[in-house]
Image (cartoon, rainbow, N blue to C red):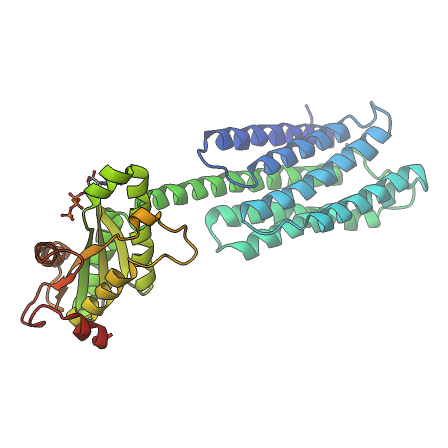
Length: 404
Ligand SMILES: Nc1nc2c(ncn2[C@@H]2O[C@H](COP(=O)(O)OP(=O)(O)OP(=O)(O)O)[C@@H](O)[C@H]2O)c(=O)[nH]1
């Protein structure tokens, strides 16, 4: 088989079908929907169909490649732009895409039915394809930071656009009377070859983008507590160790507090586990709300949460903890209210801080745990600090509130 335009079109058609199947297979394996995958598979099928229709040129009526093939290719490329925008969580300008594609389709039909002109048809076609592919490349460039997978997809799609610009130029400079699409012409074969290579880049890049996104999901699952959205204990410890190292270099304090919901077992037993879960989410929302973005808040286990506050001394941390304790009695703005029977939820909090020399997160939390134990034994619904020398009479409310 010689490498002419026809055999390269066959390769394009086969590749498009294979990559549609790959993307659909990946989509089926996902537990949560990933936007854009189905549209990408559909666009590939349309582009593959278009390549097949062009491949049959000379063996089928002229309208098959001229109308069916070109329309399928235009709809396919338009769909791939929509797919990329969906994938990157960008709004899809449906009306604009439909209008652009519809106008090009009408113009293509016009060059066959109203004013027959194969050269004009080819120029409209490749010009439209170049614009659409450039649009897709632009979407990829602006919607997320560059990665290997993104760069690969952009090279494929951008290359598609450039190949079509080159084809537009060669078509415009054809000698009068020369056939517009001669599948045995080396220039046409070079154009088709470029499309094959760019198609491979583009689709491999997109498959890698999908696997990147899956990896981000897995990381996210590992980093966060599924129920409350707070950090998981492992993620919190990893980040807290880095914060402690930084504090040692900078000579600053690091504080931590442990939050335990009072009589949580009774809440579960009397109102059910769903109510218990709602209380956990309620406390976690307040915990995240009172902290700065540089602080860490995670689920320590069961009904206990932990906060790590870099560059914070003991009394400031106690003031923040106390603010959280008071806030727990209030509804969370924008969140569903707790049922009336649960409005009396309270927490006990133990606070500790370490000076720059200490670098053990375990020690810091052990001290906070000791303070929490004191708070529980003092009657619950209160904040206690670990270092009583720094806070004589163990933190009067007025004192820590005036401090903050
Ligand atoms: N609903 C729900 N309950 C949980 C979850 N994880 C742990 N628990 C329950 O949390 C309760 C923990 O209770 P404890 O902290 O031991 O005791 P408590 O009733 O809070 O008593 P004090 O801490 O002394 O005030 C247990 O009944 C666990 O079953 C969860 O994810 N959801």
